[in-house]
Image (cartoon, rainbow, N blue to C red; front, side, top):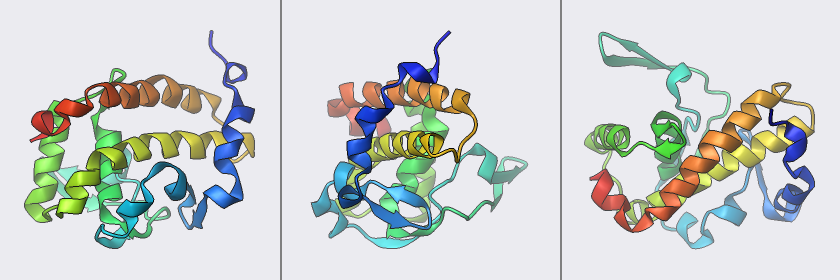
Length: 178
């Protein structure tokens, strides 16, 4: 049985140094560390939900009827909202599910086209989404804000594996997505 004691928490704290983070209502965002600084100057910004996942969306008869839980929302690069949704809806069995990603991506760009900069940085934004979610929750667990260690272990097992898998097939990303 795996335990949180197997995770080298102290090795993660350099990522949490105040010089490397931006604090927002969403919590600690590792924008300066994991997302290219040059990307933040060319990406369209606006209001983001940033936590669009199955338990935060409402459907009726197969149609989206509502979105709930706006406590993590803030203004920032809109591509991060898409990346977070792709992360949550398309992580399956330790892999990034491109079949699901195509459906979500096409629905999104049908409503809002991506800029050239957003297309360029979407894959980086997905990596950022995976890694920041894991790091923020490990930090929150260490500070006592998250009582469920099993959730963190699930993230380390499934989300980190999916992120690694996505990194391996980087060259084929757009061919698989579009």
